[in-house]
Image (cartoon, rainbow, N blue to C red):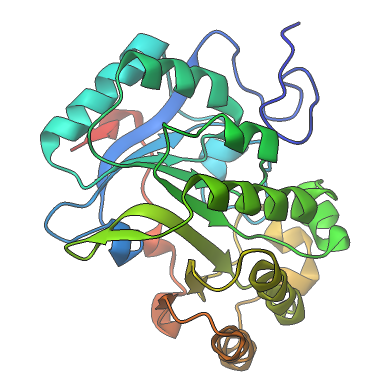
Length: 290
């Protein structure tokens, strides 16, 4: 059995993520227009590659077809390098690697075959190890971390990852060493760090703790994206405490505190974003949308 240490589970095999060790599974390649504006200019979009399977598998995942069921096509390292070329030629602003962690070794092989001249975005669940983030130096330009949980209890209950936050924070610290400053050209982030956070119902105090610790660790010179779009999906119905939508008051408490902490770069989502319409449709017939 191959020895895999691509994520902090260090399970040495594919028993959790379900990936194939010989191939890379991809669900969709598209010109994405719904990422944060700083990496997704309207006239270009972001060149998103949605990887299938997942090392975290949150029970409320909106892309559960990919993360839990592994929907997608198997491709080789050489084919992934060719996809990089196609996206670059299409004129997108960057190459956006969505949920890439469990394929880290294969992605680095592809980037060694072909490194695009446009920025590479590591769009991750945040369940990373700092040792693996170090390997991305010279390859990744923008780190987009989903900050999921502070509490071990929440991380264990919803993602079976009680060691989530310690690895998330250590990985952000390492990413800050790799890209110490934000580089913005013509309104587009070329190098830097974005922390995206989906506020969960009943968990606003946990959300606040995440940003308190980020500030203490790396300061406020990162972009933040606070999302209100949570909709109970997939297995969320089995967890009564999150089987509802976020309230305006919960969201306001989080955004107000993040601003008070001094984070002044980033985005606060409109509250009417609580819709499944923002989730891409994953279909084998629509593999390429560029």
